[in-house]
Amino acid sequence: MGPNSLDDLYESYIADIYRYLCSLCHDHHAAEDLTQETFYRAYLYLEDCKEEKIKPWLFRVAYNAFVDYKRKEKRSVSREEGYFSSLPHPETTEGILLRQERWEEAALALSRLPEGQRHALLLHDYHGLTYKEAADVMNVGLSQYKILVFRARQKLREAERRRNDHE
Image 1 (cartoon, rainbow, N blue to C red):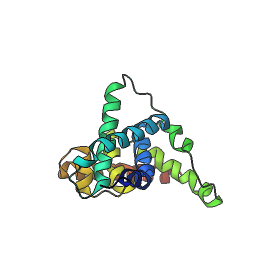
Image 2 (image 1 turned 180 degrees about the vertical axis):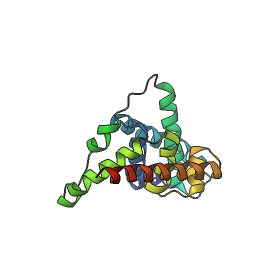
Image 3 (image 1 turned 90 degrees about the vertical axis):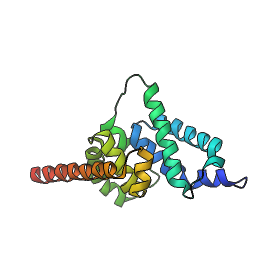
Image 4 (image 1 turned 45 degrees about the vertical axis):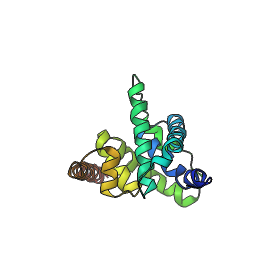
């Protein structure tokens, strides 16, 4: 790896890693700290990375940093309701504002999923990892991972149906 490779890695993946960690811990300050921790660990172990695909490896480093953070944290204070609306958003076009309500509803439904199901869905659907890569990040078997994704999607569909029934 050349001298600029960590900078390249940082530039390429910082936004993805930050969003992923934000969606895990629902706290943008913690996500910022964990993003820095992820890239610090990546810097330390980059030369040991035998994998061709850096992105899934980086997500696994981020996930492990998150797990360590959760272990250290004695109690979890969840800000699920307001979390997505408080994220810094670089664009403020009219179209985005019109979509924001819909996005917040989806984000709220996602935040209500059990943690494992939410992780599984985020890794594949939002961050584009393959099922195998995401299963490796979560350290579960492929079939167990597929079950988590299936159940998460099922719950989101049920929530959507209930919402439509009330309209």
